[in-house]
Length: 95
Image (cartoon, rainbow, N blue to C red; front, side, top):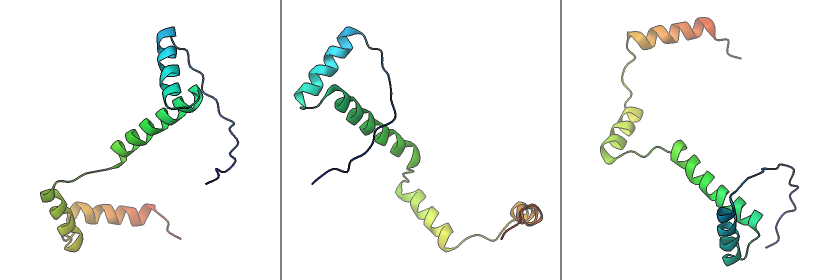
């Protein structure tokens, strides 16, 4: 499968000690990648894991049941919610 030609215009500069640089070069070599390609793929993999960690919520069975029960059978609005809804209507113009 051919890769799309993507123009690279952003740059990241790193300062490394000699030992760290040699280890990265060795790892890149083992995977048949350039140092730049190795660093980008490693950083992107970790970025995806980090983003998923902070953007994903996992519920246990009990909490998942409670969540879905509230969606299917929502409780009646209480006084605080009614007040908030009234304030919203006064302050927000919907088009």
